Length: 211
Image (tube, rainbow, N blue to C red; front, side):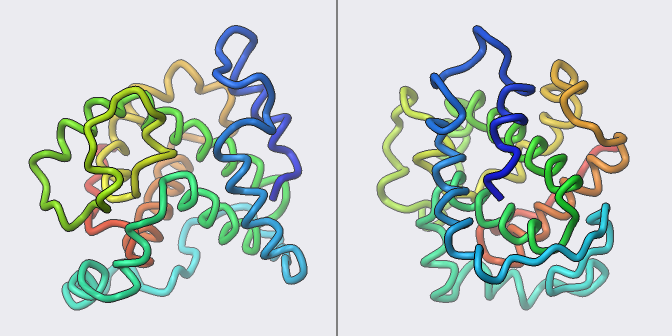
């Protein structure tokens, strides 16, 4: 999981764009390292180069009404909502790393890193929007309206799906050369991530992507 992070980091963040001195100081790298240590002994690659249709525990055509209630109200969701965006992204990358080839994982890592930066760049907007959402969706420590911190370090994953369209239609344009995937593949990947978030109880939000 940690292999290739340095290369992706340097491709995504050119000199002068970096908020940290090296890849190893990036908040997401630190979370990935923790997940990597847990998975190292059982990590396997199935060798596929696509996440479209990848089983994540539910079929996309299934009625999710019962699951939506479960995701938002059960004890597992209570625990999951305490995790930061960075912790969640690291867990997703751990999930992906066990399903795909190393080459494709590098593409997913780049995608996640860029999406993570997009979310944090709109941190102030997300904090403002959070005021209109039910308080139980957010842990106590993330209800403080502090715009000076990195959003993905200090906030849970409830609002991650809210940034999908902004990322795909605006943010990614300036970094398109870094992601070696077709537009359709990016959309498939975003859908996979968001359904994984929903299925695992990291958000109660469903996505409605603008293609």
